[in-house]
Length: 159
Image 1 (spheres, one colour):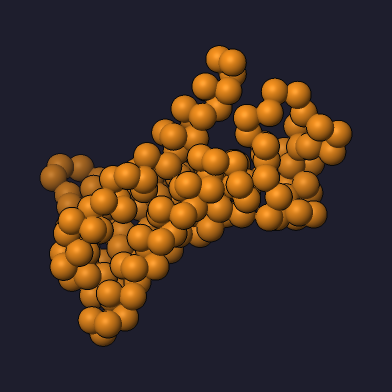
Image 2 (cartoon, one colour; image 1 turned 90 degrees about the vertical axis):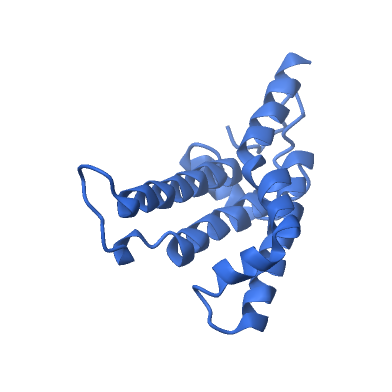
């Protein structure tokens, strides 16, 4: 039973940023979220749409990962979401003060960029496992569940 708890807790830690915190922040501070999105897309309606899509991704994909229902596909979507948000909103290369030493807003944004990419890597590992056999299993059935709370693996499960 402890192994099921650890499996669930590790998934909770992985999605904690999105559910509940980022999703809740989008609800409580919708106007500010739209203003931030306008930095990437100048059209206010499109920015509102992006925030709505982001909210849906954060809630639905996190729930899928926690429940184990189509969790591999959900983890892949969240990996892509992390990469997209890094590229759209963590543009360290555009900051005028990127330096390796001293105070630097650009370096702070760079670390946020890398954290988004690292989180994407974690989601991809959740989707595919830790080896080539897991990648093959994912490619053969990308919408399948990884059955995260089953104690005995079934034949054909990725190691």
